Amino acid sequence: MRRIRFTPCLSLVVALVIVLAAVVPAQARGDGRVICGGVHSPRPSAAEMYDTTLSVRNANLERPADVRITRLTIRDFFGNVVDDFGEAATPARPLPTNKAIPPSFNFDVTTVPPGANYYLATSDIYGNNFMPSAPGAGNNISIAIDFTTSGDPDLVFVGGSLRVRELVGGVQGPEHSRAGNTCWRLK
Image (cartoon, rainbow, N blue to C red; front, top):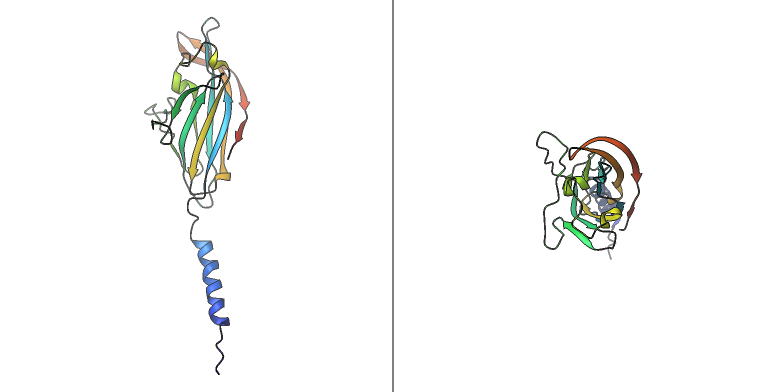
C-alpha cells in the first residue's frame, strides 16, 4: 500500500490563507450607533443662540474605508422624536447639509472619507429658530447617529460641542463660549 503525503499540500493551503487574509480587505466590518446630548435654543431677549455641533471623524487610514451616516435622530427634552433623517429613517429623508462650508454652503456630510472630520450643527437644521416641539423642549436634547463602514467601526469617533453665539439682527455673530460634549457608543 502506498502512503499519500499531505504535508506539502497542507503547507501550501495554510500559506494561501495567510496571504489572502493579509491582502483582501475586510468586507462590511460593521455598523455603529452613538448618542450625544445637546441643546438648541435661541435666546431672543439676550440676543444669543445656544446650539450643538456634532463631528464624525473617520480614522480608517491603514485600510481606507468611507463611513456612511445612515440615520440621524433628534429627540426633545421629553424623549419625543423631533426629526429623523437618513436612508434608515422611516420614511427615508436626506441628511441635513452643513451650511458653513464654502463654496456652496450646502455641504453633504452623508459620507465621511478616511481621515476626514465632518460636522453638522443644529443651527444647520433649525436655523436661529426654536425646534418644532413643545416650548422648552430644545433645552436638553439627544441626538443619535447610526453609521456603517466596510472599515473598522472602532475607528469612527463622534464628538460634539455646545456653543453660544451672539445673534446680531437675527444672524449668528461672534462665538461667546464653547464646551466639549460627550457622546456614548451604543453599538
